[in-house]
Image (cartoon, rainbow, N blue to C red):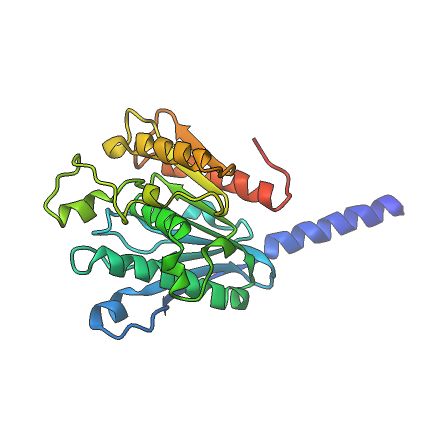
Length: 270
């Protein structure tokens, strides 16, 4: 009888898990800005598991060199029990990089205010993104002023996981000053300018150093070294061999999930 009860219980749990539904709401405006371009562009999508609470929340910023791209919910983040937010931001050269960074900060602030409405836990927010999106994640992490503007402490984010983000000043920010992609500068728009020892865990993921865009791995390696030198012990650097700038994205999600599970005290699948 006991065995039958256990079998029935396991069956019920399996059916419940299988029946777990996910919902996506698109084109939610997250801004208080009133200009036409902001009203058109500053929207986000929310993907979430129905009927669940205290879920991790992953904020995903798309790539596109700060000049292109659009919001997305990556397939690799779906049906994992996460609330996933894919956010747009205004693009260069229509706006300045300051405005783009402010948009990214406003999107994260929106998530802090609204995550619980979708079953998310504001103590478990992860900010991530690929390429330009990774660059935005880095700067929000290291330069606290951007999120402070929206009364959010950058250190209240649980973890930052930029995929192939630029650690020096972004090449298209430099282009607006007449510089070429290989004319490197480090100024207030370079994440490495803001190294600090008291930020949340920072997980840097890049493709193969010989295949990456404009020495992207080497920039991240330098940032990781500087973070270690200032005393930040939870900076992690990964190089995905054999994968270039675009192809590194899919395997990078496994690294993100591994670190997230570690922080949540869950079993980690190697």
